[in-house]
Image (tube, rainbow, N blue to C red; front, side):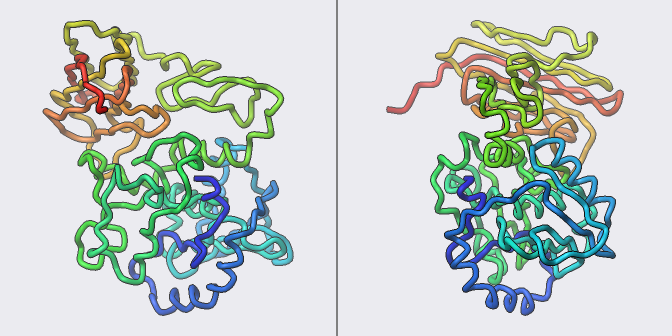
Length: 391
């Protein structure tokens, strides 16, 4: 995806996440006035130079912006430098109270400040600021991936006509996603009702459980940061080669170590995150017999399940009772990483669920229970199954 990162669509630059209540005529005028520039911009290959200068214009919530960028600096090699006064003759970012939430994708001006609009309520969440800032760094929306049809369905008949372009599929090849799978928990993913014209769903995940995950604005996901790091940061530790396990990648700040997905740790991301002693047994090797994994209370427990490579793993969620949240994310309830890419956010459960089944894409599964209350609990049945490969 990361030519995707710096190139704009030939016919328009992305305006991301514009508030559905915006003045559409003003937005359309903005698009029309910039159409020629966008066609030229699609062939440019400029990258941001660090630190990226930025200014927060009142009444935008300065604290939210500063902290959101601080987290991005912690997770990537990207750096930002705050200006206390406006500037305009050098590349940088201006966060201002504009019409809706949007950003140009990639570095657009090499000698001029670039705007990020944080309209009403856009500066409430760190993830919203990070979403728009990531567009400026070059990220497109997750639902624009060329492989998105395997994971979600776009109901264009429910989308406001003026915003259909935001649901277009990227024409970039899979190689530009750096080996990552589609990430339902991405901070760059639209929600199920985004830009709906009739209060009906516009985005439907193929697995219903992800309906309570897509569109989260808690934070960028591990794979969002991975894309930024793989595009901007690989030269930082280029002299030190390291192979990371479980879809980790070279750490942007500590050469010779890996940055690990949630649930993994160690220099090479080859170890399971340590759990409380009260979690009981946390490592399982499946044979012919099925096993049961359960836990309760206010604690953090991480479990790993392995079996022979010729088998897949069937996880039956007998019951989950975690703190209800309308939008779930990792470390908020029960997460099951059953997909091939362990960097992608797993299936997350925040609330009460029972009798749900997941089938792993390989021979290993990671399960993390985050109990927020003493009455939280879960119970799973786990077994190996033989899945015949399609010819």
